Length: 167
Image (spheres, rainbow, N blue to C red):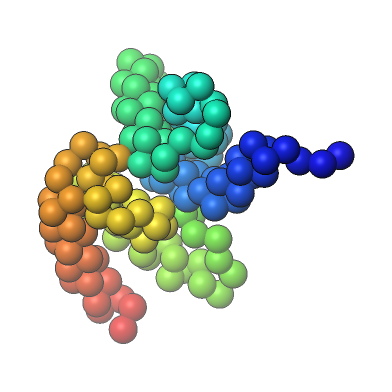
């Protein structure tokens, strides 16, 4: 069965961005299943906006993930008992690492989680999402210069938090 050009374009786009979208969603969602749902819903919504003729721009999908994550958090806040039970299970690592590096990855994950949300988002989109500051700005609805500044501040804070532990 041969792929049509449209299918090939979508497959190439998914190969390039799926893991990046999932990583960003993991930062936003308390559980892996929620993160996967956020990605699926965001890709579908973004594609529908463009009539699914072509894969949507990555910043559009990232911003849709972010918006849907905010909606999810609001729904979960209304179910506080369920949130407390789920928060105990939200300890999965953000990194796919070997056993030897899990402790280091956990330390970095903890440091990132201590950053203010506006810094965490920019770090995730820049490092793991592979976006430019212009694309980050578009995804978050902020100027590119603000995205760059937040990135610099976040990196400096991470250096301070991990300096003694990782050296």
